[in-house]
Image 1 (cartoon, helix red, strand yellow):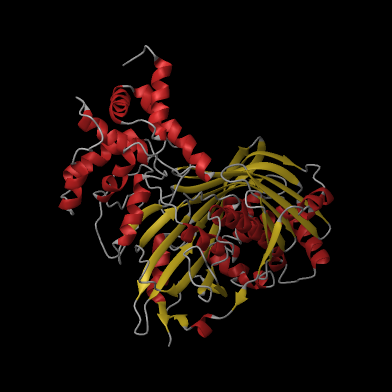
Image 2 (tube, chains in turn yellow, red):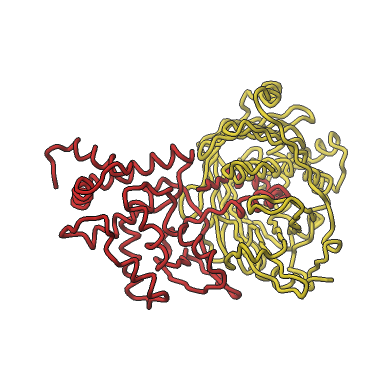
Length: 365
Length: 231
């Protein structure tokens, strides 16, 4: 990664994240159709099922709601302004374009706050344009094949962890919506309140709630145009216009936790391991050969990543837990006979869940 | 409050912010700043502008007056962990000439230099520290306060500080003292912590890349533009 400007690290991070998730949204419907990866027939089937079920929203289960939301994110052309807010104030805002055509999905996200940044996604290819650094970061997200199995957690597992309840009607950005509460069945995860567009199910507003029902983060469209005349080829053209930019491709190095020498001695309820990578993270100025292990878990809705690297006695950091909106971070030093380790656990989960992960992480060799 | 020569005063503030004043001019400008709330507001704006021009981004910060008042209260209540440093912090700044309201103003100057009038940007909030962190609901501040004034002191001598909050400054000094458990709680429930760490931001990006919140249908919306302006 380019270390010259620290500003875009986080910026592109989150947009990239956004796009990844969008990608996740598009792929995961396959799970709902029973892991049928054939796109056309499966989707038509789902849509028919959704149309039938549309009769009585009050009877939907959590899976029905999630299915609708995923489908709507795939099928709708829209343009809107999106704002993310934490309890402490605004975090960020962006303008989002989404266009789809047959099997092609194109998205564009322009940040409206902070350093300028544009992220484009075409199916599984993500390109982040950083005008200030004249840099394009290009990625092909690998874990798409993993996504359907990721929820393997599977539908029944999510239903065991969360329950859905229709709260009533609401309006967001002038658009009618159903308000749905997704309540966790234990204290290891956050709850959500979703404003789902009445007709299609597209998520218009999402509130992340803690155990006391307080809003830790809210993300919502402040303005949205559904079925907007957004053309895929127009967005594709913008995505291909790389004149004057330097393109940087990043590859993810896959591994397994066992190969890295780590395991969990006890399962944290509901969370299954999803992926494990070795990354070269340079913000700390680590030497070129150093790698950090990233072990990611998910319960179907929330994810937790455990980053483990050798403890650097030259740059000691503070242990503790931090919160940024719905994302909590826990840092801890892990003692080891052969050299201490530094754990950073990150996830959209309450701090006690990160604690549970930190307690259960053990070194195998 | 000096209303005559209003624009001249603003010029002086600007020159002071740029570090162009010396000796008697400096003392007079500082004196004027101390007595005029408008001038202090201008002072903060100049620093904000400078910060943005230099770094292309502004560091998140809080209302310095409120923050410093609370900090003073807490410090008064808290026993001093590092007496040597705090004594140094309380010593009069040699460059400033004595003014009637100097003790009060000095704190405000420190705050004005070290913090910048906030827009809405937010940073990480400390929930707890140490091996058994308490998962507090409200925003608590883990702050090594005695070091903060010492760090920002040199900046008062006319040289514009590189910005960032007192908290961030103290966080970096905190990093240099690894296993220190010094902890001062400032405020409760109010958003005060502004910590930006490029390392953490990088991890957050990696987390979201690997599927952070990916399964929540609109998870991408939540994280879509999650900004983390670094200092």
